[in-house]
Length: 337
Image (cartoon, rainbow, N blue to C red; front, side):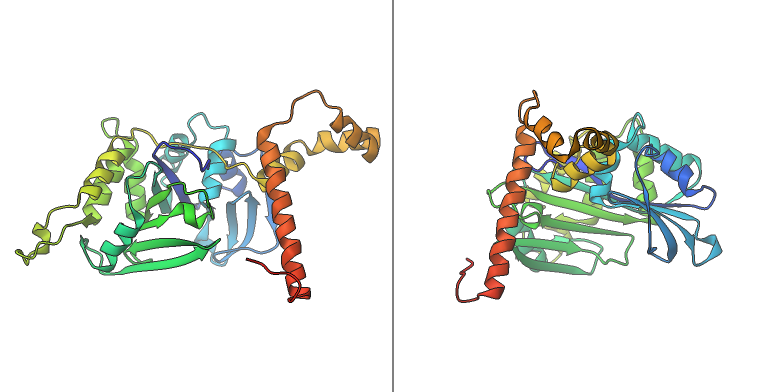
């Protein structure tokens, strides 16, 4: 998704569902992605022998057991691709309608609230989790710290990976390696089976927004509290101001936001080779490599800053790789800071 937006949003960040009555091609059509160049991978996944794959979207079939059916799953990036590439009029609404009208089961659904405006202080959140200053039916918690580009990324998980729902709160900006000081904290609910299906069903309630559903489920499973030394009953402790602010902000979001694919080197190459590849190949045949390059240099359209940024990033990463190669070959010659 676009990583420099200021608006706080709710988005879908993982979906997995299975059908025992549809072919892989029928499910790709149901996704509105029949026009996309899915490729057959050599290796299956999750017990399936075969997999059709397109840009972080997988359609798995030919399972080890006869009753495994066809499984579709898309990661966070796959969700962004689905939103951008699907020919469905209302991609998520239409897809969930297809799932429920065919009595299919959602195995996993991740829904995330992205805070870009500074509502959450990730250090305070992780401190409160570490010190058990929260109320939750979950008995499992974990606070971790990782580093990327010398930036510390904090993460807190409340709940177990085996449970039907867990909450994950982490510094998304640090995870993505942004060094410009932007604020991007994600609150993510990972739901399975009954919880996932119930959340998706709630989207069709005309009187309830997705923000209200997200806020209600979140508050039911997690509440951060202020310690009160005069009261030994933790359930009576007052909810922290920041959690009130989160719940209030989330509940005001009426619709999920489909922010689109973050445009990067891979997305650019995918568009050129998989969508414009036939036209590019034809021009190469007609004008030859030298003539093709000359026509590109003489093109009338002005340079697009989006593509210039991709080239600059690619050159910077290429320079870094060369420096690291020199560091390995001549450790006393190159100092990497």
